[in-house]
Length: 508
Ligand SMILES: Cc1cc2nc3c(=O)[nH]c(=O)nc-3n(C[C@H](O)[C@H](O)[C@H](O)COP(=O)(O)OP(=O)(O)OC[C@H]3O[C@@H](n4cnc5c(N)ncnc54)[C@H](O)[C@@H]3O)c2cc1C
Image (cartoon, rainbow, N blue to C red; front, side, top):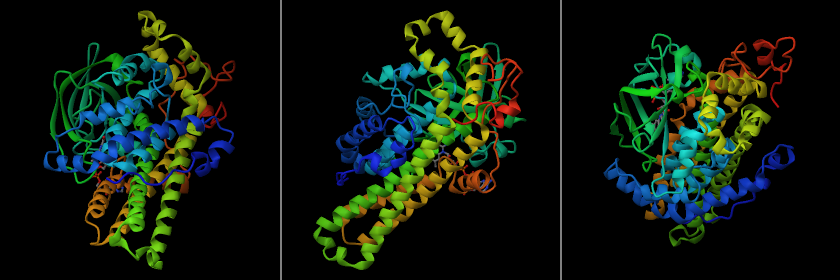
């Protein structure tokens, strides 16, 4: 694809709220991350985009590990991993900024890194107990010639939309089942359309421990793809974003030990909501990047290609370009608004909690000692992590954040379709090469309206969270009687209701 032509404005210019809002976001660090993503996009992604799209059309199972290695060299696999585990410590804002850059070059290649980030996100809910296991393994692998990828598997053959909403989950046609056995669980069933599913080493996977009551027993497991009983049924032949595989996975009595249950048994519905709230702003950014990629390619073509001579003088074309600029700007504001809301008002507070930060200062060598590891992986520690989550946010704050994330995702997907379609209409039959590039971006854009919940489901979340101001149960329940972190009024006994009502340290 043609190189990205236009110079980007500083982030602080596009998002004055980042510097004026008095929040702790380090804009310079974000700017450096974006520059790194852009360098990777220009040097490795853009030049390969069209060729990989063609190759994966011929053979959907073809996969470019060289690109993964190049991405790893630019830190694209670890920026979301907490700093104590050796990563960049980013959250939704960082993921979104990276995704826009990569997607302006090639959304399919970007999805490899986006699906990896999606796979990591449930582990963030596991708190410090996850730092010294798979997360630090992922960071170490980034410095080798065999970087490890992750995936997140929620969708089943008979349940897509239904497993992405806690209310629908109760009625979903789920066929998978995690059966309790001594020392862990045995997982059986199938997962469908899993991005990176065929190439990931580790998969965060959601299943009920009682299929008759999925809503209350939906649980997140960390599955090793090299386990006995794990297999890849097929890799889909995709219409767009082809560079990233979408795979159907089969699990036949795959053993997962207790310590690889992420958070706690039964916390999966909340984990799903939190994961989707984290990943929908980046999907809005994916869509914004696609729209930007189409717009920038169109501008270069209009300004430089002889076949486009005279088009820029037409008022109709000027109006279309102005409306593209407008749509892209608003889509970017929407995803950034949703991401910063999530990172600074809804969920990020738990990562910045003094107890979590203090643990982060404990050298990894000490944290990895058997006794300390046992403590970190204990039920008590898992309860404590959830307790911290409740103390740093509230269900109403997370519900609002989910709604804003859904808005950014749905709006972004529609903008990407409109902008790529309008760009194709302006080019018409005039330029063969740019037409092929825009046609690819149009196919790539369609997926943004489908994954991370279809736009219809996302708009229903907007209705519930913003129009009706409902509060959705999207935090794992607080087990106050087992919690090690005393609520602020521990002396008189802080209640779950009070905490949920925001009285005991609501959003900060
Ligand atoms: C290429 C690709 C990659 C993907 N990657 C992943 C991944 O990495 N991990 C993962 O877990 N999943 C992944 N998915 C799955 C994706 O999230 C689902 O496809 C999506 O949630 C929709 O589910 P479905 O396909 O079963 O459609 P369905 O749920 O069958 O929906 C079909 C239609 O009905 C509408 N609909 C359904 N229920 C309702 C309702 N209650 N109210 C209103 N409208 C409704 C939907 O909006 C849609 O238009 C991927 C999908 C694709 C295509």
